[in-house]
Amino acid sequence: MKVQANRLDRGFYKYQKEFEDKALEVLRSGWYVLGKEVSSFEEEFASYVGSKYCVGLASGLDALWLAFKALGIGKGDEVIVQANTYIASVMGITINDATPVFCEPDEYYNIDADKIENLITDKTKAVLVVHLYGQASNMDKISKICKKHNLRLVEDCAQSHGSCFKGKMTGTFSDIGCFSFYPSKNLGAFGDAGAIVTDDLKIAEDMKMLRNYGSRVRYYNEVVGANSRLDELQAGLLRVRLNHLKELTDERLEIGERYLKGINNPRIELPKIREGADAVWHQFVIKCDDRDELIEYLKSKEIGTIIHYPIPPHLSEAYEYLGHKEGDYPITENYAKTVLSIPMYNEMTVEEQQYVIDALNAF
Image (cartoon, rainbow, N blue to C red; front, side, top):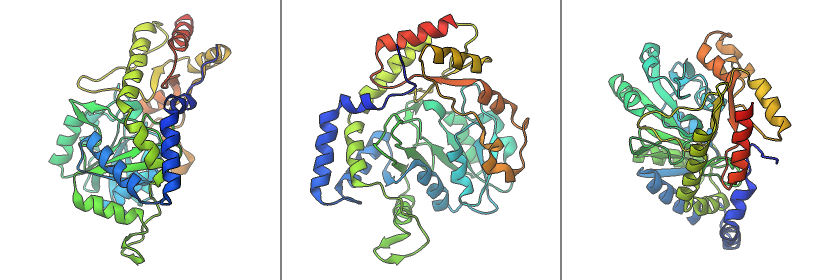
């Protein structure tokens, strides 16, 4: 049996007629940018998340860097962010000429809230929380720290659509929640797409200006903005998938539960779930000291895997100028050498899941 690390085609075929009908509806409408599909998706996604406003954007990275731009964070400012995140989280900070201050993760792969306060300086202006792999971070403690020190709070929810902390959805704890709808996400489009959510009307209006060349009125440009508009076709297709997101999430929860119960190998460490947090299993990440050997073994069984992520941002070539070296963040670096994402996708059959479980148990 061959089991890929991810399958996007099955997610299409599950709702094929709805997707095709919506695509034709948009194509036949004659309106392709910032029309009724975008505004409808913004209303529906804000309602789903529990925010007052949603602004559709071209990508998750745009959501991040435009969020910090809208908050006025730039040169000379520091933003605390976990060290083991995907590099886009850090790029959202540095595109604005602000400085990322890395914080080690906890045992749940999210930012260690107990380490944040020691990193705060007079230059610190914000904390960026990343709900990595689909599990909510420790938002009670992080929110209290930000209020105590008068810091802005931004959430990177690229992997946590539908994930909650104590019943409140990720993206709603902060000044701005940033989402990606890249095709592999739990709520995925059929190309690049993103959005922010907020309860602040001014932020929402500023984001709409920034996404459209810095213009509120056509050809009158207040600032240097971006071309970052969620297009009508992607918005329409996202509306279809959003309508099914609960059942899609429930399916991932079933797969995650089957993995947690079925995988039993002392060489493999299973993911932990924080009390009060939900995990929507964007990725199911195991930990293994013999990861390279495990990857080759699974490859021999035709089981695909992905490393999220092999090179921490602080050791990437892109951020050499920050002056970090190996050993600066040992927990992060250990994760980079030992974590492995096993197959996890909607419409994964029980037989495929059991084949993965049996292979891991036999390693």
